[in-house]
Length: 137
Ligand SMILES: [Zn+2]
Image 1 (cartoon, rainbow, N blue to C red):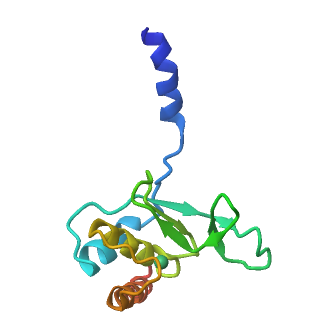
Image 2: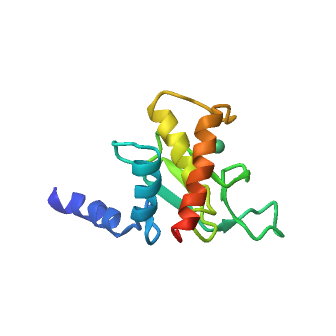
């Protein structure tokens, strides 16, 4: 019985962490999640995409690509193992990092705002992008 369980556990242990952070992500998270958004709860795990958008081969930016081939700068779903998925565009401030963290924060508050109608929230998220860039993040 022990042997039967040992093999799957070893395989799981060898998989790459899907929420593996980018270098200095802890600093970026501190600036946005804890300081900017004044959150005390745990931030979301973030998975990073380094893929180009298949339907836009001339666009040099990376994208999050869904199963239907739709491309996004990021997306967030509280039920995912890594709730925020973000296209890495060279730095945190130039990626949709702060934006997706805002979606996650709203989700924790029971707010669903896919059309970005809560303007104060989105203004703050844009300010966080500038802050990150100012910090060299
Ligand atoms: Zn959004």
